Amino acid sequence: MDPTPVWSITCLFILPRVRKRGLSIRLIEEAVRYARQQGARVVEGYPVAPEGEYPPAFAGTGIASAYERAGFREVARRSPTRPVMRRRLRGLPGKPRGAGKTRGGRGLR
Image 1: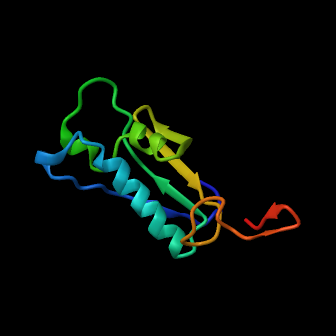
Image 2: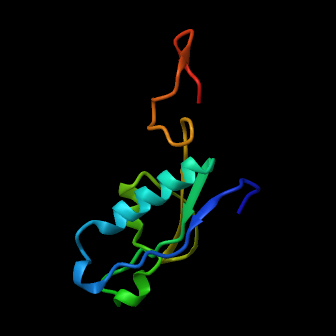
């Protein structure tokens, strides 16, 4: 899409018996945490934005609403049901947002 280096979340696997419990959001958040610890500055996901009912097999890349709840924003759409979601990471690797040291009242980010 552009020259920005990104880490990508390409698949979320959740056992059928534990689906619809918010686990996809937690998986996305943990993937972001890991990417940040490894020095990533941008993470992308390629979920489905279903229109009505959909077979669970189509949700392997995640659902757009779960990415939105994890802080991602749509940056492109290649087809009606396939957005490209992106989250820019701030802060120091492995640190929560706002945990960086400050100098002169300004955060180092």
